[in-house]
Length: 144
Image (cartoon, rainbow, N blue to C red):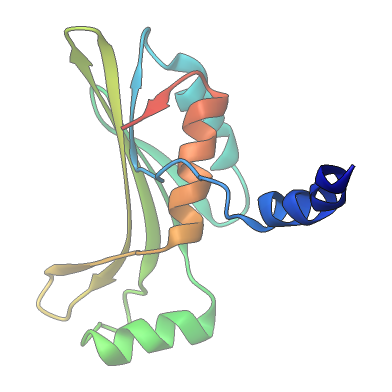
């Protein structure tokens, strides 16, 4: 009977223990060609101000202009050119592997320079990494 008194305390300890979260990744493996993933990516890039572009055989990009404050921040901090505004870019690329397909995601800010060059500022975000990993899993992939 004394053992039963410890069950609520044990339950509280177990409930408060951090749960293991899968490591977020911007890459995933798919057994078959991830056509649904690319279709969903294209559909999500069809809103106002967004531009979807196929940039290679198995590479796709979605870009959009940023809100004024974010654009100004990037122009000032990365010596951007105000007549050619920065954009947010997400790129998905797919490559065939021995066991299926590998998909990689790159997210960055594209900051045009007065010289015509482009500075790519990587977008680092744990929240974004978690969302990408969740999307990969939902579409049948295994984040790597």
